[in-house]
Image (cartoon, rainbow, N blue to C red; front, side):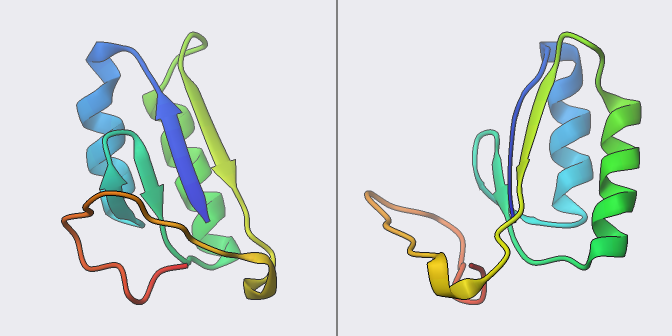
Length: 84
């Protein structure tokens, strides 16, 4: 799954810290990783409590590995060999 967000300055730290509990922080407002459906439900409920109506969070559920191709340009600081 991939989660991207665009939230107000007052919510950035809280959203980032919350998502780090579940997913790998790739860059600025981008997280990725694999989680179970029940964990996703908890993640959604938790995020809903941290944002307001002007914030945006997009969650991309990738249903199968056979359609995923990851193309990386530049440098990524974190070890992501076991993610997507």
